[in-house]
Amino acid sequence: LAPVIVVSAKKEDIDKIHGLGLGADDYMTKPFSPSELVARVKAHINRYESLTEKSSEKTAKNETIEVGDLKIDRTALRVFVRGEEKNLTSKEFDLLYYMASHPGQVFSRTQLYNRIWQDNSEFNIDEVVRFHVQALRRKLSPSGKDFIQTVWGIGYRFIDND
Image (cartoon, rainbow, N blue to C red):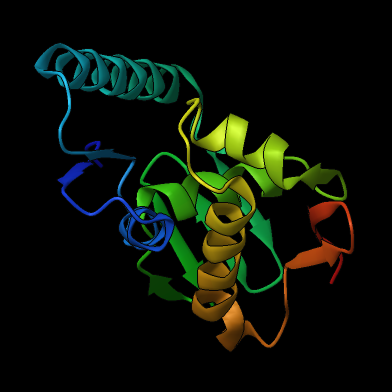
C-alpha cells in the first residue's frame, strides 16, 4: 500500500472528508507551497518505509489477529470475514488493526486520529474517524457482528468476545 496525497482546488470540509474517506492519506488544497508538498511527500514516504520495516521485523504470529469470523493479517495487509477477503483502504486497515490490537480499550476519536493519521491538519477529526468507522462496519457486517462498539460521548472500542 503506497501513500496517497490528494491535491485539489476544493477547500470545503466535506470535500476533504470525502477525499480522505476514499482512502487518501493526506489532502492539500490549492494554492500551496511546492516545498510544503515535497515535505509532506517525504513525511509520508518515511512513515511508509518505517511501517514496512517494522512489519518485516515482526513475526507472522504477532501479525495476525483472529476474532470469531474475522481474520486480520498485518503481514499480507489482508482482512477476511468468514473466509471472504474484504477490500479496505490503508486507513481503514490501520484503524481496524490498531483497535483489534487493543481489544476492550476505549479510544477517543482524537486518539484514533492522532495514531492513524499522525498529522496536524485542519480536518474535522470527529467526521474523519466517524466516516472510517462507518465504512469498516459496512465492510465487516456480513459476519453478523459489529466488532467496533460506540462508547457514547467518548469514542470507540474493539470487542473481541464471541
